Image (tube, rainbow, N blue to C red; front, side, top):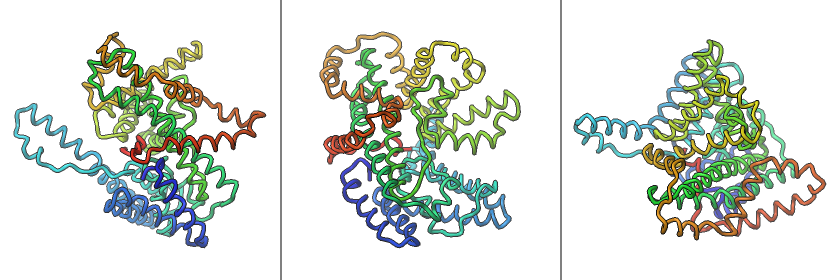
Length: 466
């Protein structure tokens, strides 16, 4: 069930809110759990059992850890979560690579080719990371184990953030599970945040997703260099507004149900280098990997060589987390390479340059990296980058078609809006003398978003497949 759909906005969400607010306080988490499981089962059917099983295992592991058998509880939790993550997300990838290796060596591949494909459950990357953070924090003594299974299962399955994040840590909301504030002011803030996220998704992300898809589905040899750049710039805009739009909706929905989730984006496209970018982009993931992978490996405490090695591992994990594909791994390591270069002293060189040059450098690294993110394989990624950096006129017929399809008032208008809202203009506007117009703007965004909603074709959020 996609947030940017009629069935979610005008059927599921009203029923969920009515059910939740009609319930007595002591039953609110139970109602939230039931509607969240229904939300997940709507898309995944029987795989909701996997979500429930994950909740049961990690709930039990938390109690085992707190009872004194710390290593046993933590080991069971981590092995279980990594096992289901590997089985459902990376097993196909493993067999695909074994097939390629066997084929290269001239060995018989029939046994591998006959292995059935495994479907990736929505949100598995998010809820496994959430539950692992819980047991690790209990092991470290940062939080107490939750003895109420309903509360814990409600935390794991909470529908606003279940299928595409942000990765909500138990330590950040455990007190809210017991007691949280419900108020009209908080509810109104949540509604406004949902509308802004919906507008990001429907008006901006979906517009540029259509452009990017129309270009990336063409034969790369037919594209000209300008259209290759149009395609990847469209993907860059889609990439940010899709995920930040979902995060806005998740945070807004959380507020409507009384929860305060941490921010997941802080205008990453205004960054001046890649170090700053990763402090502003997908904050819940980057901070999770920092706290549970980088620091666990020793962080920067063992000297420069180990620090660089740990950073490589971190960005390998980030790339692999995004998808079971060499493209995602290369995408992660591509970012990691520039992080290492900047850590090695290039950030000091950058800081002495004119700020627009610093910003241009960051955007060029980001845009180039997204070629790996958007293409299907490494060969395609290399061919596309060749189109970008070695000038080509491409196929004139194809270019004429793309020109007709893209250069219109609608596209140019949303391009300007997208560029403007990559900057913190919203915060500045709210502090200005024109803040009285805020409600008018939000209502206008809601009206436009509803007009642009397509009942027959809901474009899923990008991170649904992670």
